[in-house]
Length: 319
Image (cartoon, rainbow, N blue to C red; front, side):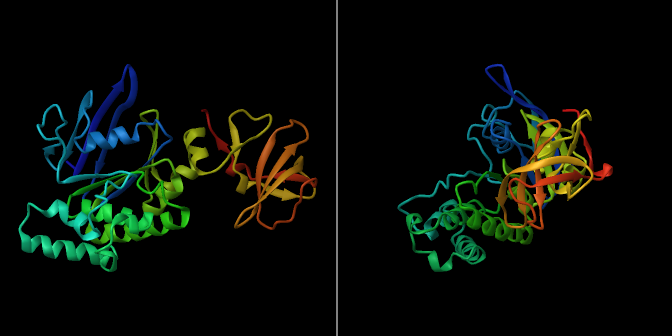
C-alpha cells in the first residue's frame, strides 16, 4: 500500500453525483495537482480526504490507518492531514506569532518554541512576528495560515484553491516559494484548482476532474500532446476545429501563417500578448473564427492570410 490512498470514493448530493469512484495513490513527499472547473467535486474530495465530510462509499488511508469520517469519529479531522482554504482563517486580534503558536498550545513548551521560530524563519515571517493579519498582504496572510497548518508537522497538506484571492504576481511568487519549501520539508501535498497554470507551477503530476470523475491523469506534456477529450485539450489552450474533417482540431500555436497556399482567411481582431499577437481569423469558406498565434507580430486587422499546419500536430478528439 502507498503512503496515502483514496479508494473508490463516491459522494452524491440530493441524487446528483459529486464524486464517481475517485481513487488515487501517493507516495510520501509526492505532489499532486487536481484540476477541474467549479462544481467538479474538488473541494468535496479534499474534505473527505481530511475526514471532515461523509462519503457515500469508499475509504481513505494514511499509510495503513483509515481516515474516518464524522459519522465514525467523535471529533472530525486529523492532525496528520491538514486542509488549507482560500479563506485564511486567521485570528484577527492575534499576532503572526500567536496564530502560528496556537496549534502548539498542547505541546511541550520547548518543542513549541523551537517549532514556531523555525516556521517564522522558513516562511520569511520573522520581521512580521508581532504584526496582526490586517497589517499583512494577502500573500503574507496565506503564508501565516500555511505555517500554522504545518506547526504540528502534518504528513499530508491539502490545498483548496488557497491562492485564488491573490493577484497574479503575488500568487506566482508564493506558489514557487511554497513548492521549494514543501520539497525541503518532504510534505505530501494535494493541490486542487481550476487554474492549470497554477497547478503546473507546483507540480507536473496532474489529475483532470470533470463532474466528479477522472477524465485523464499524467504529466503535463502527455496531457497536452495526447489529450483524450476536447475538455482536457482546452485546459491547455483553445483548439480550432478543422473544416471538412470530423473530430479534428489544431492548437493556435501549431498554425503557420503564410502569404499563399493553405486555408484562406482574414484577420478580424488582434490582441497583443506578452510573447505573441493573438489573431482572430475568419475563414473564407466556412466562416469559422480561428484563434492563431502570430509570434512575429506581422499581421494586422484586415490582412489576408493563409493557414497551414503539420498533419502530425492535428488532435483527433471524440468529445
